[in-house]
Image 1: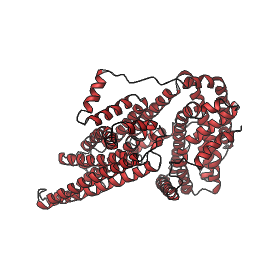
Image 2: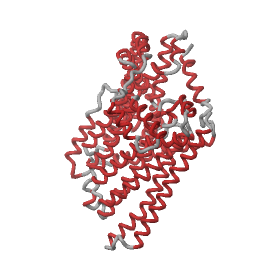
Image 3: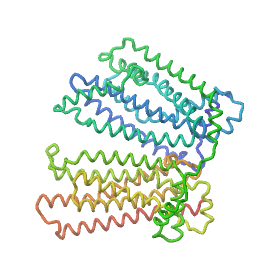
Image 4: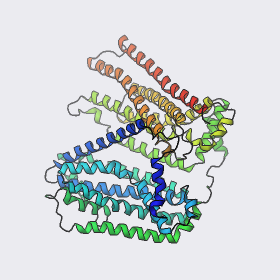
Length: 571
């Protein structure tokens, strides 16, 4: 059995999706294709715009762009290394077809190569999504020849294969020492914490001062910082050194660059060979350890039980039972804890960004009065909060029904109606999500020095956003369930997940449009020195509030009704 035969099931699954998939629909293909092209175009346009700005920096523009490209490839290499490491645990130890393949007469080297290529393919999508439009933007900025784009294909294969082979080697060693499932969750946690720490460190450098003439000494220091991460021993530096002469032959010399391409391919070959040696030495023992059962991480202590009972106390008996089940299931799944830490890291990054805007409302920005700048930041913060709520809901609210998995028939046979079942799912997501959203709302508005009335209005708008987004997530998750998928991240990648994200974005924009009307009137009244208690302004606020409440009720009610109807029809 050849390597291509071992990879063929993945290609067949891609061409022939499962019965409950909607990818066969030409309309769905056109929809997803349009979204992908639009996203690529946005990345290309933004990258090209930034490259043009940096290229105009006197004397150092081209050198600066080369250093930035080296940093980008270093970032890609680091992310590929971590992504391949996490994926390798699934492809080598946790995949469903491993029991069959390991008992089949397949040569070890062919099995190994097929899994390495599969790991690389699953982990390199980020390069295609973000890297291709960025490299195209670099080529257009320097007016590169067609040979530059051909060389991108030449270096792509070894650049992706090196971190994949290294990650497989580390995965084999770690799986020999620790159970594979536990190590995968631990690596995800370490990656999240490392990314958050790196981002916070980068923000403390205040890169926005880079092009400020008054910060020239800081600019020189930042140039040194950009030079530090590059190294002649890193594959990312080899790629940049090989591509630079094709990018701009007049600005970058091509003398001696052949050694970099040779180093890439030799390193890829060496990494694969060494990884195969470790595969022959450790795989049997590592695969045996990966089949160990999960250890129960939840202990029914009286403190945990009291907290569960207290959180479900205000609800009816059936809802209390379902909420207690949801909380206990969450506590027993350490993978969900890693998601919470990821969420915490993103919140810290979000709040840290707004902490740098504490003085913006006391000055004029490009001649704009401070009051308008303050309200712009206020509205911008609400928009970002809406997108954060949607992003969290697509991870926790939309997969809530699908995570019941093949045990959903127990819910159908229990004396609990589908309405009570969906309401318990709604409350199990809504309560922590609302607490999180309101905490961010108050904190960020304090950083931009909003007054008390503005903070109360923001909290009310966020409450409406959370109700609508959570209702849409749980309801549409019931309309488009994927009970055969146990990974919440994969559940949200289908047609239903994308549809929910689009609906939630429109819902956030609708609430922002309603809230902007009284905000604009308030700014006008402040400029003219008029009282905010005028009948006209009060009537406007009351009408906007009633319309917002009606829209919130419909945003919650309609998807939940659709979800209840869909679940009643599930066989």
